[in-house]
Length: 153
Image (cartoon, rainbow, N blue to C red; front, top):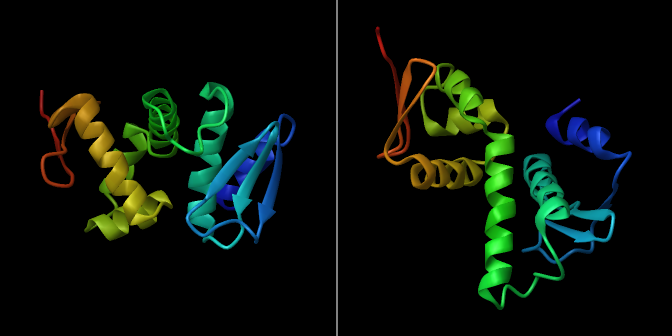
């Protein structure tokens, strides 16, 4: 079972997930009541990322924010994305995958995300934590991509 199948199975009691081939290309997912529509034309990685974000919208968004016309709508969109970043790539998973990777393409592959999603997540963590954060005796440097070093006591 891949990430998408596992995630979909874990939420099927609360939400209906429909994979649609007729969605606009720039739309990865959409919430309609208790139904989450996922663009079936996208690769499984993007579908999984979209599903996580749409689940975050189910929990945090009020009303229709598709137009992104107001600051409040943009804030709701960004909040759902932040939840998706932290859910799909928590810091401990980032550290674990980093040590098995030689570059950011491998890192994205080891995390089962697109390189774009990885870059967005790293940018988010850079904003949230600053350039350097310590997690479990390891320093994560977000200044230029990602570098991790072990801290000795």
